[in-house]
Length: 295
Length: 291
Image (cartoon, rainbow over all chains, first blue to last red; front, side, top):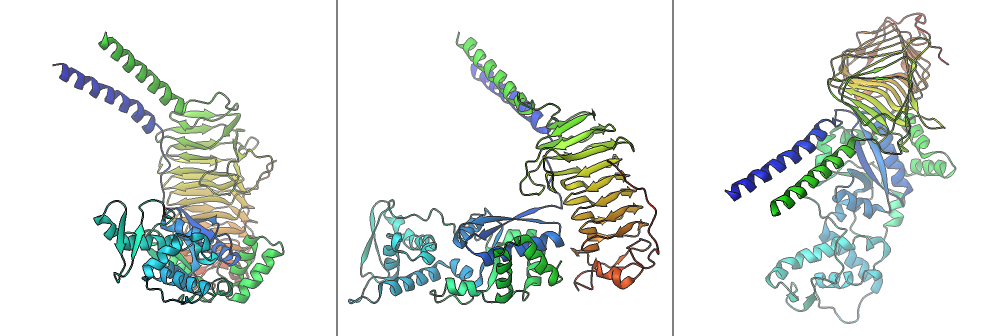
């Protein structure tokens, strides 16, 4: 009997609480997401004037030709924008096609990192018998030594290496040793203490990255910046987004396609010059789009 | 004894919940005078000065009446000049803003130095009750007036210095005797067949923008001229050709009119505009000369 009464009381209280909150909630209509005026967030690598110009171009082009708003969000560098997209904090960014595809392939990133290491430290006298994974993993434990350009990728590699050893770790839950590929040497792995890939999000298979058409020219700026990275096939600026975004905004790839072939390194150089000489970026980009009769 | 304690605890919890929940919709102690509430839940009439800070929503089935001479000021919150976070009105109900020639209603920015996009927009959605804006001035908004699937009449009103003056989808919409000036875009719409007549769309960056599947058979006797870039612009999705006769485009010379038009001539993926017959002189329309 007591139990029943107590149950009734609880139900009554819950009902009252839901009524109070429900009333206030229902009495305030929420703005609906209508067909128009949707906003896309586009990440921009703050350390690249070229990428800023291209991002602004997409922003103005899309805003002036469709009902969609694009808002730019600056990041410290390309890697930060890349991570933000993978974490779904932004909807797209512009990178360099080969580099972006590579950055989404941890195995390739690891190879590039290893190459960089080799380049930096030179050939060793004794042949290092450790596996590739071990070498990379060792390198990750001392990220300070990483060359600037690839330091951003370390988190990718870290995760990749961790992924490789994860299955083996599962067998021994605490402090364990893991055999390398060739069973030649063991690498001690601690669950905690090593640099974690906390700023890394691997591509979501349910919502993978989509590499849109590039702008049709190889970036001189990127060539200088990434010249020491072999294995990256193309340094053409290109937008990267995610599948859900593109299916929600099917116009975006079509509009981006329209921009293909409109830019050259010379055009970018001229636009940079105008911006450096005080002309607002927005005006520089608008003039360019007008000149190309795109708006 | 235990029962009494329990009851007391329950009672105090309920009271605190009530207080907390009501505080969500009550005014802050330091709110400025004339501040509009966050929600309008019953028929309301505004007069004098009203300040809107943040989002004001109007519930479905409710009508907001605005008396002649009322000044509605929106707090400038928005540094980026878009409609997502600025002070704005979102209505599922009707708005009847009926000023007079000598006492127009003013929607403006509360900022000292006013500019385009200081505040968001007056947005009305899914309301077929019929909203009216007459003798109204809308300035410094992102989109001054923005309607979706709403019966809307706008007469003898002025939209100036907004990013966009008036934007809508479907309707029915009737625009007559209005002036759209110094906006980036005067009027923009999609998927609708509005009646737009005897309006001036002048000195905007683009006068009239047709986004998508826009019917233009009832757009006649307007002056759409002297806009900085285009008098008429088709959006990316306006793939159909557009027939928009009997308007004044500032000239009868079709090649000049085409220069101020963004259509198939400039982008092969969109429709072509046909202007003929064009009017051979400016249309006499209501002249707005407010202070």
